[in-house]
Image (cartoon, rainbow, N blue to C red; front, side, top):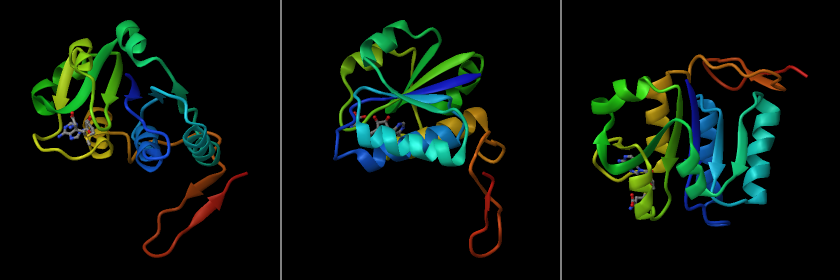
Length: 169
Ligand code: SAM
């Protein structure tokens, strides 16, 4: 199964930190790449730097969100607290070969609810795009403790206390 993320409503400057974390969660939990609805040089560079250091071929790209949603060949799933609880739909989602997961920022345009095949909630309370995405990807892919990235420069060696990092190249 291939999973991609579409992050809507990124505001340059203001959302740098939260959008970086959305992208890093997407990568660490097994998505192939992330699309943003606008280009942000600092954000794109900081995520690309993480990929160079920690490995893998995760991509970050800007896109026209509406065209992307209209043309995506696969299952389009928006994460929203107003949607159907994930456990009710997870089997249907698991049958898809290709998934685009949409997460918002402040306010998501109404059209998104129509353009997506499924609107899915991770609990019926407001929280955040970072937590919603992490839980969704974990329940769906279950990769966070298994994933290994090629060509990493650094690798963490788990330890009880302190930090152990192996320099690979
Ligand atoms: N008032 C906003 C709305 O219209 O949905 C909530 C914005 S929230 C800060 C940002 C994003 O976090 C949402 O667009 C959604 O993707 C995600 N999110 C927050 N709580 C969620 C929940 N309980 N279930 C699924 N996604 C959630």
